[in-house]
Image (cartoon, rainbow, N blue to C red; front, side):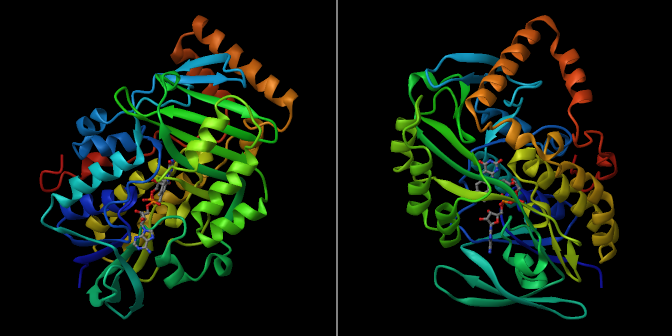
Length: 425
Ligand SMILES: Cc1cc2nc3c(=O)[nH]c(=O)nc-3n(C[C@H](O)[C@H](O)[C@H](O)COP(=O)(O)OP(=O)(O)OC[C@H]3O[C@@H](n4cnc5c(N)ncnc54)[C@H](O)[C@@H]3O)c2cc1C
Protein backbone atom coordinates (compact mmCIF):
# COMPACT_ATOMS: atom_id res chain seq x y z
CA UNK A 1 0.00 0.00 0.00
CA UNK A 2 1.45 3.43 -0.88
CA UNK A 3 1.85 5.93 1.96
CA UNK A 4 -1.15 8.19 2.57
CA UNK A 5 -1.32 9.30 6.19
CA UNK A 6 1.72 10.94 7.77
CA UNK A 7 2.40 12.16 11.31
CA UNK A 8 4.87 15.02 11.80
CA UNK A 9 6.14 15.64 15.33
CA UNK A 10 7.09 19.35 15.75
CA UNK A 11 5.60 22.52 14.25
CA UNK A 12 8.91 24.35 13.86
CA UNK A 13 10.35 25.46 10.53
CA UNK A 14 11.02 21.92 9.26
CA UNK A 15 7.64 20.51 10.38
CA UNK A 16 5.49 23.21 8.80
CA UNK A 17 7.39 23.40 5.50
CA UNK A 18 7.09 19.62 5.20
CA UNK A 19 3.36 19.68 6.06
CA UNK A 20 2.77 22.32 3.38
CA UNK A 21 4.50 20.35 0.62
CA UNK A 22 3.11 16.94 1.62
CA UNK A 23 -0.41 18.38 1.48
CA UNK A 24 0.33 19.67 -2.02
CA UNK A 25 1.21 16.09 -2.95
CA UNK A 26 -2.17 14.85 -1.61
CA UNK A 27 -0.89 13.23 1.57
CA UNK A 28 -3.01 13.54 4.72
CA UNK A 29 -0.89 15.10 7.42
CA UNK A 30 -1.25 15.46 11.19
CA UNK A 31 1.24 17.77 12.91
CA UNK A 32 1.62 17.48 16.69
CA UNK A 33 3.34 20.27 18.62
CA UNK A 34 4.05 20.18 22.33
CA UNK A 35 3.64 23.94 22.93
CA UNK A 36 0.29 25.73 23.15
CA UNK A 37 0.57 27.40 19.75
CA UNK A 38 3.20 27.27 17.03
CA UNK A 39 6.46 27.77 18.94
CA UNK A 40 7.10 31.52 18.69
CA UNK A 41 10.17 31.82 20.93
CA UNK A 42 13.59 32.59 19.49
CA UNK A 43 15.32 35.54 17.93
CA UNK A 44 16.68 36.39 14.49
CA UNK A 45 16.96 33.96 11.59
CA UNK A 46 18.06 34.49 8.03
CA UNK A 47 16.77 32.97 4.79
CA UNK A 48 18.98 32.90 1.74
CA UNK A 49 19.32 30.90 -1.47
CA UNK A 50 18.61 28.10 -2.16
CA UNK A 51 16.02 27.94 0.66
CA UNK A 52 14.64 31.26 -0.58
CA UNK A 53 13.60 29.57 -3.81
CA UNK A 54 11.38 27.17 -1.81
CA UNK A 55 9.89 30.06 0.17
CA UNK A 56 9.10 31.88 -3.09
CA UNK A 57 7.39 28.80 -4.51
CA UNK A 58 5.22 28.68 -1.35
CA UNK A 59 4.12 32.23 -2.24
CA UNK A 60 4.84 33.61 1.21
CA UNK A 61 7.76 35.89 0.37
CA UNK A 62 5.58 39.03 0.55
CA UNK A 63 4.39 38.09 4.02
CA UNK A 64 7.97 37.46 5.15
CA UNK A 65 9.16 40.74 3.66
CA UNK A 66 6.53 42.57 5.70
CA UNK A 67 8.03 41.05 8.84
CA UNK A 68 11.68 41.87 8.09
CA UNK A 69 13.40 43.30 11.14
CA UNK A 70 14.82 46.12 9.01
CA UNK A 71 18.25 45.86 10.65
CA UNK A 72 20.46 48.07 8.46
CA UNK A 73 23.77 46.41 9.21
CA UNK A 74 26.29 45.40 11.82
CA UNK A 75 28.29 47.72 14.11
CA UNK A 76 31.26 46.39 16.08
CA UNK A 77 31.56 48.42 19.27
CA UNK A 78 33.81 48.50 22.33
CA UNK A 79 33.08 48.92 26.04
CA UNK A 80 32.86 52.71 25.56
CA UNK A 81 30.30 52.26 22.70
CA UNK A 82 32.89 53.47 20.13
CA UNK A 83 32.39 51.96 16.68
CA UNK A 84 35.19 49.87 15.17
CA UNK A 85 33.52 49.34 11.80
CA UNK A 86 30.08 49.13 10.25
CA UNK A 87 29.15 46.41 7.75
CA UNK A 88 25.96 47.29 5.87
CA UNK A 89 23.33 44.49 5.44
CA UNK A 90 24.00 41.75 2.85
CA UNK A 91 27.35 40.67 1.42
CA UNK A 92 29.85 39.87 4.17
CA UNK A 93 27.82 41.45 6.97
CA UNK A 94 26.31 39.21 9.68
CA UNK A 95 23.06 41.05 8.81
CA UNK A 96 21.43 39.09 5.98
CA UNK A 97 19.17 40.45 3.25
CA UNK A 98 16.09 38.66 4.72
CA UNK A 99 16.34 38.82 8.51
CA UNK A 100 13.29 37.67 10.46
CA UNK A 101 12.27 36.76 13.96
CA UNK A 102 11.92 32.99 14.35
CA UNK A 103 8.40 33.43 15.75
CA UNK A 104 7.24 35.43 12.71
CA UNK A 105 8.65 32.78 10.39
CA UNK A 106 7.08 29.81 12.20
CA UNK A 107 3.72 31.64 12.36
CA UNK A 108 3.70 32.38 8.61
CA UNK A 109 4.75 28.81 7.79
CA UNK A 110 2.07 27.42 10.12
CA UNK A 111 -0.64 29.53 8.43
CA UNK A 112 0.54 28.45 4.96
CA UNK A 113 0.31 24.74 5.89
CA UNK A 114 -2.81 25.06 8.07
CA UNK A 115 -4.63 26.60 5.07
CA UNK A 116 -4.74 23.16 3.44
CA UNK A 117 -7.66 20.79 4.06
CA UNK A 118 -5.09 17.96 4.10
CA UNK A 119 -3.29 19.25 7.22
CA UNK A 120 -4.44 19.10 10.87
CA UNK A 121 -2.43 20.66 13.69
CA UNK A 122 -2.76 19.38 17.26
CA UNK A 123 -1.13 21.64 19.84
CA UNK A 124 -0.10 20.68 23.37
CA UNK A 125 0.33 17.20 21.99
CA UNK A 126 3.32 14.92 21.84
CA UNK A 127 4.21 11.34 20.98
CA UNK A 128 4.12 9.30 24.17
CA UNK A 129 5.14 6.03 22.54
CA UNK A 130 5.13 4.34 19.14
CA UNK A 131 5.54 0.87 17.68
CA UNK A 132 6.13 -0.15 14.11
CA UNK A 133 4.45 -3.09 12.37
CA UNK A 134 5.01 -4.41 8.86
CA UNK A 135 2.87 -1.71 7.26
CA UNK A 136 1.95 0.87 9.94
CA UNK A 137 3.21 2.97 12.82
CA UNK A 138 0.90 2.84 15.84
CA UNK A 139 1.31 5.98 17.90
CA UNK A 140 0.07 6.96 21.36
CA UNK A 141 -0.48 10.71 21.24
CA UNK A 142 -0.60 12.47 24.59
CA UNK A 143 -2.49 15.71 25.13
CA UNK A 144 -0.29 17.57 27.62
CA UNK A 145 -3.19 19.63 28.89
CA UNK A 146 -5.75 17.02 29.91
CA UNK A 147 -3.28 14.08 29.91
CA UNK A 148 -5.52 12.00 27.63
CA UNK A 149 -3.97 9.47 25.27
CA UNK A 150 -5.28 8.78 21.77
CA UNK A 151 -3.95 5.84 19.78
CA UNK A 152 -3.71 6.41 16.02
CA UNK A 153 -2.23 4.66 12.99
CA UNK A 154 -0.03 6.31 10.38
CA UNK A 155 1.86 5.09 7.32
CA UNK A 156 4.93 6.91 8.50
CA UNK A 157 6.17 9.31 11.18
CA UNK A 158 8.51 12.27 10.73
CA UNK A 159 10.48 13.53 13.73
CA UNK A 160 10.90 17.28 13.20
CA UNK A 161 11.12 17.95 16.91
CA UNK A 162 14.46 19.70 17.19
CA UNK A 163 17.90 19.01 18.63
CA UNK A 164 16.60 17.05 21.63
CA UNK A 165 14.11 15.06 19.51
CA UNK A 166 11.82 12.70 21.41
CA UNK A 167 11.01 10.83 18.21
CA UNK A 168 14.71 10.06 17.73
CA UNK A 169 14.97 8.91 21.32
CA UNK A 170 11.95 6.60 20.95
CA UNK A 171 13.08 4.85 17.77
CA UNK A 172 16.88 5.05 17.83
CA UNK A 173 17.87 5.53 21.48
CA UNK A 174 19.18 8.32 23.70
CA UNK A 175 21.87 10.77 22.49
CA UNK A 176 24.31 8.97 24.81
CA UNK A 177 23.52 5.57 23.26
CA UNK A 178 23.76 7.02 19.78
CA UNK A 179 26.76 9.21 20.62
CA UNK A 180 25.15 11.74 18.29
CA UNK A 181 25.74 15.00 20.21
CA UNK A 182 28.97 16.76 19.28
CA UNK A 183 29.62 19.60 21.72
CA UNK A 184 30.56 22.85 20.01
CA UNK A 185 32.02 24.35 23.18
CA UNK A 186 29.66 27.28 23.61
CA UNK A 187 26.64 28.38 25.65
CA UNK A 188 24.05 30.82 24.33
CA UNK A 189 21.07 32.75 25.63
CA UNK A 190 18.49 34.55 23.46
CA UNK A 191 15.89 37.02 24.78
CA UNK A 192 14.48 40.49 24.16
CA UNK A 193 14.61 43.64 26.28
CA UNK A 194 12.89 47.07 26.09
CA UNK A 195 14.35 49.14 23.29
CA UNK A 196 16.35 52.35 23.75
CA UNK A 197 17.16 54.92 21.04
CA UNK A 198 20.74 53.73 20.50
CA UNK A 199 19.49 50.21 19.61
CA UNK A 200 18.22 51.26 16.16
CA UNK A 201 18.97 50.80 13.20
CA UNK A 202 22.24 48.77 13.41
CA UNK A 203 22.87 45.62 15.36
CA UNK A 204 25.74 46.13 17.83
CA UNK A 205 28.20 43.54 19.01
CA UNK A 206 30.71 43.95 21.83
CA UNK A 207 33.48 41.51 22.80
CA UNK A 208 34.73 41.01 26.33
CA UNK A 209 37.78 39.05 27.42
CA UNK A 210 37.23 35.39 28.29
CA UNK A 211 35.33 34.72 25.03
CA UNK A 212 32.16 36.56 26.03
CA UNK A 213 29.95 38.41 23.55
CA UNK A 214 26.84 40.56 23.72
CA UNK A 215 25.06 41.09 20.42
CA UNK A 216 22.03 43.43 20.38
CA UNK A 217 19.79 43.42 17.30
CA UNK A 218 16.91 45.77 16.45
CA UNK A 219 13.52 44.18 15.93
CA UNK A 220 11.95 46.72 13.57
CA UNK A 221 11.47 50.47 13.40
CA UNK A 222 8.23 50.41 15.35
CA UNK A 223 9.17 47.65 17.79
CA UNK A 224 9.44 48.49 21.47
CA UNK A 225 11.89 45.63 22.00
CA UNK A 226 15.49 44.79 21.12
CA UNK A 227 16.80 41.29 20.65
CA UNK A 228 19.84 40.16 22.67
CA UNK A 229 22.22 37.20 22.20
CA UNK A 230 24.75 36.25 24.85
CA UNK A 231 27.41 33.90 23.51
CA UNK A 232 30.03 32.41 25.81
CA UNK A 233 32.55 30.15 24.10
CA UNK A 234 33.69 27.71 26.78
CA UNK A 235 34.01 23.92 26.98
CA UNK A 236 32.41 23.55 30.37
CA UNK A 237 30.41 25.83 32.66
CA UNK A 238 29.16 23.36 35.30
CA UNK A 239 26.40 25.49 36.90
CA UNK A 240 25.04 26.45 33.47
CA UNK A 241 25.17 22.86 32.29
CA UNK A 242 23.29 21.76 35.44
CA UNK A 243 20.67 24.50 34.93
CA UNK A 244 20.24 23.45 31.27
CA UNK A 245 19.84 19.80 32.22
CA UNK A 246 17.18 20.72 34.80
CA UNK A 247 15.49 23.17 32.38
CA UNK A 248 15.65 25.70 35.24
CA UNK A 249 15.26 29.10 33.62
CA UNK A 250 16.02 31.16 36.74
CA UNK A 251 19.24 29.25 37.37
CA UNK A 252 20.22 29.68 33.69
CA UNK A 253 19.70 33.45 34.02
CA UNK A 254 21.67 33.58 37.27
CA UNK A 255 24.56 31.69 35.69
CA UNK A 256 24.70 34.14 32.76
CA UNK A 257 24.43 37.10 35.18
CA UNK A 258 27.49 35.76 37.00
CA UNK A 259 29.47 35.18 33.78
CA UNK A 260 28.77 38.76 32.58
CA UNK A 261 29.03 40.54 35.94
CA UNK A 262 31.23 43.63 36.16
CA UNK A 263 31.46 44.17 32.39
CA UNK A 264 31.05 47.50 30.60
CA UNK A 265 29.05 48.86 27.63
CA UNK A 266 25.33 47.93 27.86
CA UNK A 267 25.99 44.89 30.08
CA UNK A 268 24.32 46.16 33.31
CA UNK A 269 21.14 47.08 31.39
CA UNK A 270 21.15 43.79 29.45
CA UNK A 271 21.59 41.65 32.57
CA UNK A 272 19.01 43.57 34.59
CA UNK A 273 16.42 43.17 31.79
CA UNK A 274 17.41 39.55 31.14
CA UNK A 275 16.24 38.67 34.66
CA UNK A 276 12.74 39.95 33.68
CA UNK A 277 12.67 38.58 30.12
CA UNK A 278 9.85 36.11 29.54
CA UNK A 279 11.06 34.84 26.17
CA UNK A 280 14.49 33.84 27.54
CA UNK A 281 15.87 30.72 25.86
CA UNK A 282 19.24 29.20 26.61
CA UNK A 283 21.15 26.08 25.71
CA UNK A 284 24.57 24.57 25.25
CA UNK A 285 25.35 24.39 21.55
CA UNK A 286 25.57 20.93 20.07
CA UNK A 287 25.61 19.45 16.62
CA UNK A 288 23.66 16.30 15.85
CA UNK A 289 25.50 13.70 13.76
CA UNK A 290 23.73 10.43 12.98
CA UNK A 291 24.77 7.38 10.98
CA UNK A 292 21.29 7.19 9.46
CA UNK A 293 18.28 9.51 9.40
CA UNK A 294 15.55 6.88 9.31
CA UNK A 295 14.58 3.66 11.00
CA UNK A 296 12.00 1.64 9.08
CA UNK A 297 8.87 3.87 8.88
CA UNK A 298 10.20 6.73 11.03
CA UNK A 299 12.39 9.44 9.51
CA UNK A 300 14.10 12.46 11.06
CA UNK A 301 14.23 15.96 9.60
CA UNK A 302 15.86 19.30 10.45
CA UNK A 303 17.69 19.79 13.75
CA UNK A 304 16.47 16.36 14.96
CA UNK A 305 18.54 14.72 12.21
CA UNK A 306 21.48 17.06 11.68
CA UNK A 307 21.45 20.21 13.87
CA UNK A 308 24.46 22.12 12.53
CA UNK A 309 24.62 24.68 15.44
CA UNK A 310 24.11 28.45 15.08
CA UNK A 311 27.86 28.90 14.38
CA UNK A 312 27.23 27.62 10.85
CA UNK A 313 24.13 29.83 10.34
CA UNK A 314 22.62 26.90 8.40
CA UNK A 315 19.98 25.38 10.74
CA UNK A 316 17.08 27.23 9.26
CA UNK A 317 18.24 26.81 5.67
CA UNK A 318 18.74 23.08 6.05
CA UNK A 319 15.34 22.65 7.71
CA UNK A 320 13.61 24.27 4.71
CA UNK A 321 15.69 22.46 2.08
CA UNK A 322 15.41 19.10 3.88
CA UNK A 323 11.61 19.40 4.14
CA UNK A 324 11.36 20.20 0.45
CA UNK A 325 13.54 17.25 -0.60
CA UNK A 326 11.75 14.79 1.71
CA UNK A 327 8.32 15.85 0.36
CA UNK A 328 9.59 15.60 -3.20
CA UNK A 329 11.00 12.10 -2.71
CA UNK A 330 7.83 10.91 -0.96
CA UNK A 331 5.75 12.22 -3.87
CA UNK A 332 7.93 10.29 -6.32
CA UNK A 333 8.02 6.99 -4.46
CA UNK A 334 5.23 6.91 -1.84
CA UNK A 335 7.15 4.11 -0.06
CA UNK A 336 10.34 3.55 1.96
CA UNK A 337 12.57 4.10 -1.08
CA UNK A 338 11.80 7.79 -0.53
CA UNK A 339 13.88 7.79 2.70
CA UNK A 340 16.91 6.33 0.90
CA UNK A 341 16.64 8.91 -1.87
CA UNK A 342 16.17 11.75 0.66
CA UNK A 343 19.34 10.76 2.50
CA UNK A 344 21.28 10.10 -0.70
CA UNK A 345 20.50 13.54 -2.09
CA UNK A 346 21.08 15.48 1.10
CA UNK A 347 23.78 13.78 3.13
CA UNK A 348 26.90 15.36 1.66
CA UNK A 349 25.21 18.76 1.38
CA UNK A 350 24.26 18.59 5.06
CA UNK A 351 27.71 17.38 6.18
CA UNK A 352 29.32 20.22 4.30
CA UNK A 353 26.93 22.74 5.87
CA UNK A 354 27.79 21.35 9.33
CA UNK A 355 31.42 22.44 8.99
CA UNK A 356 32.20 25.09 11.56
CA UNK A 357 33.86 27.99 9.68
CA UNK A 358 37.63 28.39 9.51
CA UNK A 359 38.39 24.72 10.03
CA UNK A 360 36.39 24.61 13.26
CA UNK A 361 38.33 27.51 14.84
CA UNK A 362 35.76 30.17 13.83
CA UNK A 363 34.10 30.39 17.28
CA UNK A 364 37.52 30.94 18.93
CA UNK A 365 38.80 33.41 16.34
CA UNK A 366 35.60 35.46 16.45
CA UNK A 367 35.36 35.27 20.27
CA UNK A 368 38.88 36.07 21.49
CA UNK A 369 40.15 35.19 24.94
CA UNK A 370 42.51 38.12 25.49
CA UNK A 371 42.55 41.92 25.11
CA UNK A 372 45.15 41.52 22.39
CA UNK A 373 42.90 39.11 20.47
CA UNK A 374 39.99 41.52 20.72
CA UNK A 375 42.20 44.38 19.49
CA UNK A 376 43.27 42.28 16.49
CA UNK A 377 39.68 41.38 15.63
CA UNK A 378 38.48 44.99 15.91
CA UNK A 379 41.35 46.15 13.72
CA UNK A 380 40.48 43.51 11.10
CA UNK A 381 36.82 44.55 11.03
CA UNK A 382 37.87 48.21 10.70
CA UNK A 383 40.05 47.24 7.72
CA UNK A 384 37.23 45.26 6.09
CA UNK A 385 34.73 48.09 6.53
CA UNK A 386 37.25 50.59 5.02
CA UNK A 387 38.01 48.21 2.15
CA UNK A 388 34.32 47.97 1.36
CA UNK A 389 34.32 51.68 0.61
CA UNK A 390 36.87 51.05 -2.14
CA UNK A 391 35.95 47.63 -3.51
CA UNK A 392 32.46 46.85 -4.74
CA UNK A 393 30.35 44.46 -2.65
CA UNK A 394 30.31 41.88 -5.37
CA UNK A 395 34.07 41.85 -5.78
CA UNK A 396 34.61 41.53 -2.02
CA UNK A 397 32.08 38.72 -1.72
CA UNK A 398 33.87 36.84 -4.52
CA UNK A 399 37.26 37.34 -2.86
CA UNK A 400 35.94 36.11 0.51
CA UNK A 401 34.17 33.13 -1.07
CA UNK A 402 37.57 32.01 -2.28
CA UNK A 403 39.36 32.65 1.02
CA UNK A 404 36.81 31.30 3.53
CA UNK A 405 36.72 27.49 3.59
CA UNK A 406 33.78 25.21 4.32
CA UNK A 407 31.00 27.22 2.70
CA UNK A 408 28.00 25.01 1.76
CA UNK A 409 27.24 24.75 -1.96
CA UNK A 410 24.68 27.39 -2.89
CA UNK A 411 24.14 25.61 -6.22
CA UNK A 412 22.42 22.59 -4.62
CA UNK A 413 19.92 21.31 -7.20
CA UNK A 414 16.43 21.53 -5.70
CA UNK A 415 14.85 20.16 -8.88
CA UNK A 416 12.17 22.72 -8.17
CA UNK A 417 10.83 22.80 -11.74
CA UNK A 418 9.78 19.14 -11.47
CA UNK A 419 7.24 19.62 -8.73
CA UNK A 420 4.41 21.40 -10.44
CA UNK A 421 1.71 19.54 -8.55
CA UNK A 422 -1.81 20.68 -7.86
CA UNK A 423 -1.04 24.28 -8.68
CA UNK A 424 1.86 24.35 -6.23
CA UNK A 425 3.64 26.95 -8.31
C1 LIG B 1 12.56 27.91 21.20
C2 LIG B 1 13.58 27.96 20.10
C3 LIG B 1 14.28 29.15 19.84
C4 LIG B 1 15.24 29.20 18.83
N1 LIG B 1 15.87 30.38 18.60
C5 LIG B 1 16.77 30.48 17.61
C6 LIG B 1 17.42 31.71 17.31
O1 LIG B 1 17.15 32.72 17.94
N2 LIG B 1 18.35 31.75 16.31
C7 LIG B 1 18.65 30.62 15.58
O2 LIG B 1 19.49 30.69 14.67
N3 LIG B 1 18.05 29.44 15.83
C8 LIG B 1 17.12 29.34 16.82
N4 LIG B 1 16.50 28.15 17.07
C9 LIG B 1 16.85 26.99 16.24
C10 LIG B 1 16.23 27.08 14.84
O3 LIG B 1 14.85 27.36 14.94
C11 LIG B 1 16.45 25.75 14.13
O4 LIG B 1 17.86 25.50 14.05
C12 LIG B 1 15.97 25.68 12.70
O5 LIG B 1 14.91 26.54 12.42
C13 LIG B 1 15.59 24.23 12.38
O6 LIG B 1 14.29 24.02 12.82
P1 LIG B 1 13.61 22.64 13.17
O7 LIG B 1 12.18 22.80 12.76
O8 LIG B 1 14.37 21.49 12.68
O9 LIG B 1 13.71 22.57 14.77
P2 LIG B 1 13.13 23.55 15.88
O10 LIG B 1 13.13 24.95 15.42
O11 LIG B 1 13.84 23.23 17.13
O12 LIG B 1 11.58 23.11 16.00
C14 LIG B 1 11.19 21.91 16.65
C15 LIG B 1 9.72 22.02 17.02
O13 LIG B 1 9.33 20.80 17.63
C16 LIG B 1 8.65 21.07 18.84
N5 LIG B 1 8.87 19.91 19.73
C17 LIG B 1 10.01 19.60 20.37
N6 LIG B 1 9.84 18.44 21.06
C18 LIG B 1 8.57 18.05 20.82
C19 LIG B 1 7.80 16.93 21.26
N7 LIG B 1 8.32 16.00 22.09
N8 LIG B 1 6.52 16.81 20.81
C20 LIG B 1 5.97 17.75 19.96
N9 LIG B 1 6.66 18.84 19.56
C21 LIG B 1 7.94 18.98 19.97
C22 LIG B 1 9.27 22.35 19.36
O14 LIG B 1 8.42 23.04 20.26
C23 LIG B 1 9.44 23.12 18.04
O15 LIG B 1 8.27 23.82 17.69
C24 LIG B 1 15.54 28.04 18.06
C25 LIG B 1 14.84 26.85 18.33
C26 LIG B 1 13.87 26.79 19.33
C27 LIG B 1 13.12 25.50 19.59
